[in-house]
Image (cartoon, one colour):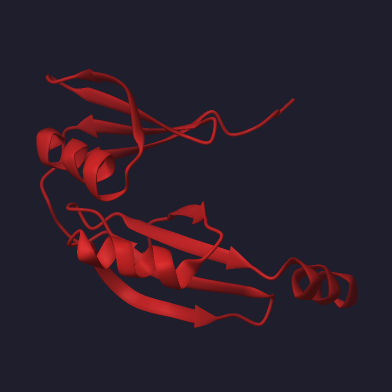
Length: 127
């Protein structure tokens, strides 16, 4: 049956621009790049794929990719310094996470998550 997530692929309007964002702003390791239609990046064993093919526009309601981080405030500052556009800055959740939402050049929603594991497991045990 299902084993794990192999990849998450976004369709983007400008592949070169998107590759620059994921490689430079997010500092992900590029696995391969086919300039005519696809690029793949490694993110802890899960591939983030970028596929050329759509006009730029709003992606309201589209699922997001969630990046686990150790220190969200530090990561937030670094990414802001690289020009990353945040939709919502770091904020606490009821389940023990601290999250921040940002967007890539095509308005795909991305999320940073720092988890207080003790609170997370306590809340999950009660729920």
